[in-house]
Amino acid sequence: MTCSLTAPPPPPSNFHLSTFIFQLPNPSDISYSVHYFSAKMFNTFYTLKPVITQQYSTRLQVVFRQHIQPWHPSSTLTHEAGAAVLRLAPEKFWDFSAALFKCQTEFFDISVVNETRNKTYERLAKVAASVGVDGNKLLDLLIIRETPGEDGQLNAGNQVTNDIKWMVKGAEERSISSSFTAAQWEEWLAKNVI
Image (cartoon, rainbow, N blue to C red; front, side):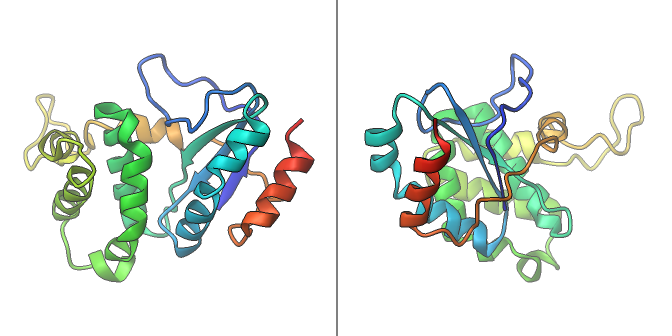
């Protein structure tokens, strides 16, 4: 679980890194992964939207940044799905994230260990479709082809591979805990948002 208060490097001009809750001057990145504590942090922080809007609306920009945990192989797959949502319907990214956190245990290690990568993508496409994203288009971005590329490439990834490569660069803010209560978030915001 990471949160960065430093401005991230600018993404490529055609890349939708994240969807902002608010368009404000001071960036604050909140990173999420496929982990119980990520869902806890997401759900708690998201309840603060009215507080942030009322008290910090002229000084804070909240950026949801995906944080892949490579020791959980399905983490990459869920974040690839998030990248695909950002390409197809960036305005649905927060809704997709909320839906994914609700069923996150279905994508934990034990739940995917005997499933092919493409089958997991199919299930992620259904989660995206549940919030109004075109599941077929999302799946087309994610699917790993079973035949070599035109140049014989056997390890080309999918259509969001380059997006994921860009995402894995970042920084952490260690003063934020995934166990923060709403009151602790308010205290942290009051102290750190100038």
